[in-house]
Image 1 (cartoon, rainbow, N blue to C red):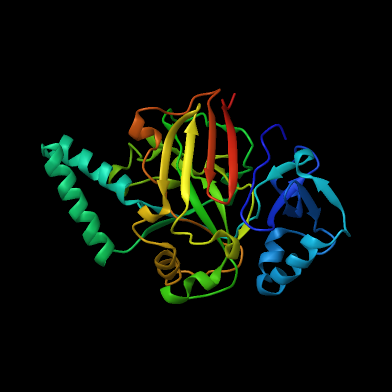
Image 2 (cartoon, rainbow, N blue to C red):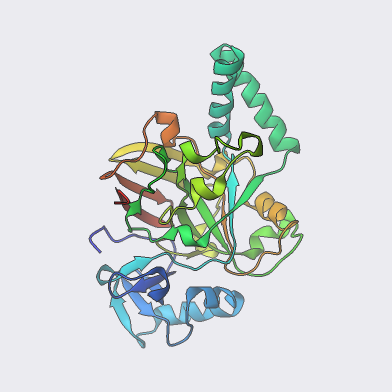
Length: 325
């Protein structure tokens, strides 16, 4: 791995690794302590299997992290895959206040002729009301879009406005339905990083405008969900509502925001999605992306671009963009 070694909060983290470049399903589960990785395949077949028995495994992981026994690798010698193969991928849209205010204010100016001051004030009132009485906006993603934290992003043949959306993601650690918000964090095994890429000029079907958004085409191209490098146990992360999300595009900071700016925090997101679907261990919930995507800057991804991304305590990603051809 040519990228700098990613660091993480706490004494250990979990990940999926390969001895060389490999497909998503070909790796082994590993326990990361500093610059070393303990192969866990003598105990479990995958990180997903470990998460499915999370309460029993967590204290054992503390022991394994301190033991000399087992097969250990240097992290720098391994290819880092996405840390866990998810069941469901639940993706939160329009969940950062400043981001949504920017979008709504721009529409009020361009479509309704409002002054910048009027447009922003109206948009902020709308968001305040949404926080008080609204509900999250969530849709499903495809696990086939997932790629590793240092893999190339391959632009699809369709569309031109390929955009980044860096997000805090959480991994569910136990099953639940109709989960109260007050108990929701008890269902979180750990956190990771996901970059929920979008082809914006394929977000709406020109032949079916009345139907609305086409999330499948716009968000689920192969490699369009770089995830990882690690699953960091929730106990090591601290307050998930106080983490810094930072993305650089070709060295220029484009996103730099605290998770404090979420409209619906993690407990409310979990409570909401669990009213519709039973959450199970390994499910991945993306919590939304802050302001600063390419559409805001008028800049979209091109072959040769490099994205560097990080979230406090969760490590970092680096992805190079290349053409499908």
